[in-house]
Length: 138
Image (cartoon, rainbow, N blue to C red; front, side, top):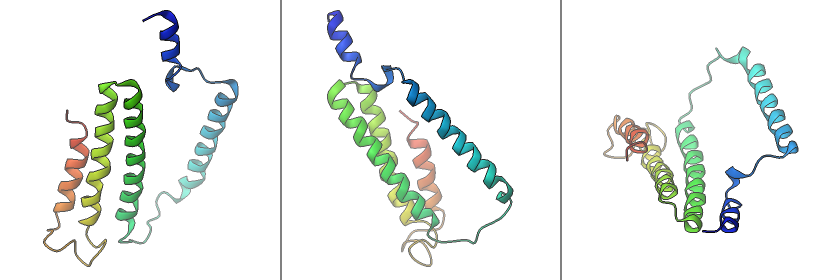
């Protein structure tokens, strides 16, 4: 591999490109906005909201979409770079996206008064366990 090929290869990676001055300013502004929102929400931290049965499926659907999009991005990056580390990371995100489907379907009171027929109450917790420990196991 020549020096020119190495320079062309490094241009493919967004992580190797240094941020511009504008990007640094936008990042600092975004951090300031997030901190201001956290500060504005701090007085309401002790308040409890009413219980809603659709909260877990709504969060799980957002997690499904973001993890699936991330897995697709990593898989497309793997098709360019052929790095097996990226493929392993993509498979982890794909696993995480797919395991939230049964987790959401078996949540207590989400789609029916109880969980799905035949699903005992602790089954959702087992899916949560496999979801969070399955990603970290090789």
